[in-house]
Amino acid sequence: MLKSIKNYFFSAFREIFVYHHSSLEFRAKTYAVLIASSHEPLSNYQNTLNEIASEIYSEPDRANALVITVKEYLKNIHIKKQRGEEALLIEVIRELRQVPRYALKIEPEHLTRLQSCTNDEDSLIYQDRLIDFLKQKRLEYRELKR
Image (cartoon, one colour):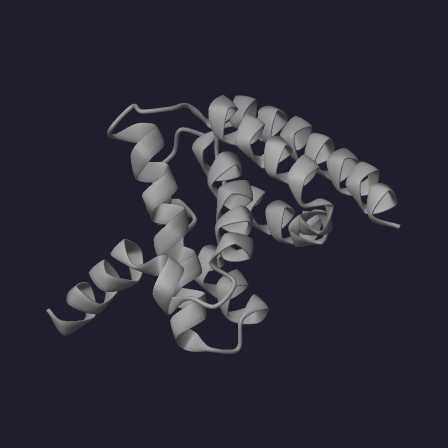
């Protein structure tokens, strides 16, 4: 119960409680785009996502905030049907244009690890293309940053 209340406050007041929340949200969007593209349940990806979050952030609260944020984006895509993964991908590209240093937040190794949790062959092909696209964007915007 206490953990769910804490997660709610992290979610509702992320901008206040989480240091550099926009960077964390950008990273969460890239993971959510990849996971949503498979149309498989989050449970297939949960352990790997937790591991990746713990590797990125040494603070457990920040790692947890990343996982919660990914879940929120997936919920918006799947349950509320507010937007699809394509709209979220467009948002990622727009943010890269505004903040080119976010290109370093696209970590192909992490995306590939998440992809390894996918079982459907068609989804794997689509995810390969997504990862290649994000790698390309990472290179483009990293060059712009220089």
